[in-house]
Image (cartoon, rainbow, N blue to C red; front, top):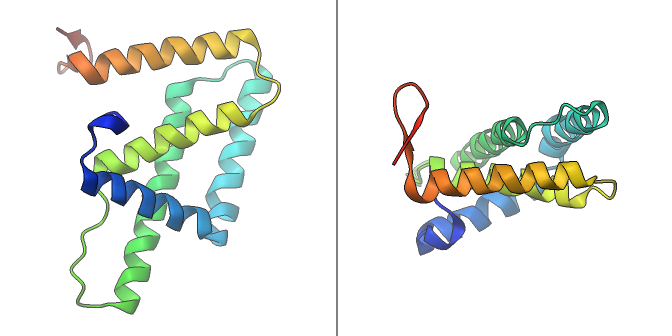
Length: 140
């Protein structure tokens, strides 16, 4: 995934379009967003919250929004030929939703914030400079 400032203009437009579509879908909110929020809140309460896994949960939400968008578009314009949103766009949207969820919580402790900052720093280092090898270890 590329950070937002490295998304091209087309990907930024796609990100806004998918986010607006997903936020306007009541059925997606009921079927995906509420259960994800409840699940993450339980994990925070138990003290076993993992930011990377929360991004993965939000990725399921973004993928589902992508499928619903594609289905809705095909029903209105069967010959439109528009491709679904790219993996980078969906992954960035998932990362953004995970971060927004944590920022929306009022009872964040210092440990949660420090864990989020550490995870974000590791994730940023991974995105900017490093790629994993086959075993998942980071290479320079």
